[in-house]
Length: 311
Image 1 (cartoon, helix red, strand yellow):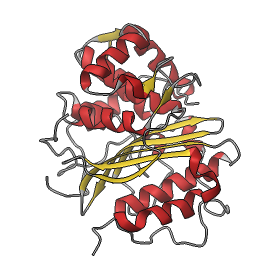
Image 2 (spheres, rainbow, N blue to C red):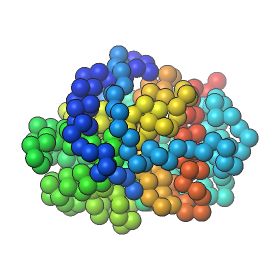
Image 3 (cartoon, rainbow, N blue to C red):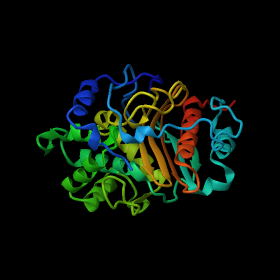
Image 4 (spheres, rainbow, N blue to C red):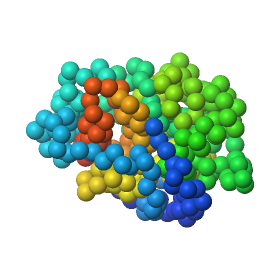
């Protein structure tokens, strides 16, 4: 796999047109080794409409997630754990779940509560759209002659709750989605689906279930569409205002998640040393301000983007 920091062009027109026919006022948020590299020789997808989740810009001046350490501190897998614990706070570490693996060979680079259940918020849309893309053709009309590929783009890029719940009903409900994801290789004991959007707190998942889904989708026939539907750090979708002017800008495709006391981010990181990383970060901590949780998540992702091999 070529290790590069460039991104998509094939679905740029699709992404732009898919996001043009829905009003921004209704957008809301509350297996095998891959044989392709979707990050090679590509550019980011343009999108010009903000979604409400983007209004939560990280507060870089708060006390949580700083701890006096620079965000650009270099790290390697052996030194990552103390850095992460300084970012999230040792007293709240049990409220976080983090799993990071290489896409190419599945090597675990970091695991903190990777098999513990958390509320995923809108990271649930990863399950919904992955199941839909496995069950239906991208050209399948979902509603008003809007194709599945357009529906998925809006669901993930804008984190559209209505679209996600409609899509879940269309494919047969949570039971059908879970059966499809199980066939994809995701352990059915590692997640519970109550809706398509992630608004229900009855949804639970482990970071591992999300990483396994992301890995399987990357190498699936609809992998290019799925990855292209995710927001890009500092550039579009619900990540437009996050990780700007950091090394992670343009190098992270990931789904955001927001509920009261819950923040989540799961997706792919382009790392110059390890190639593509698959990751999931879930924070269930009602004692911290939401902006502080977002700031901490973004610091961790920047560290992962810059991570090198240990000497």
